Image (cartoon, rainbow, N blue to C red):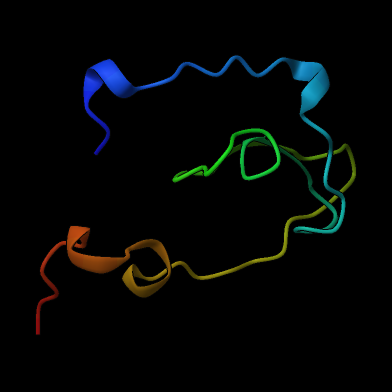
Length: 77
């Protein structure tokens, strides 16, 4: 973690956030925090827009796809 006095604020304007049509079609994803908008981004933040008439692809999210490293809760048996 970066010490508080060494942290840098980055303002990201909506015009800087493009729309990615290939990440998870037919959704429109706008990544606000990524390597394209913030130097050495350690996180990812985006907004997802479901256009009228589009259907999301069903998917299963498991702890292995959402957790990384030691921050995952203990897995039971």
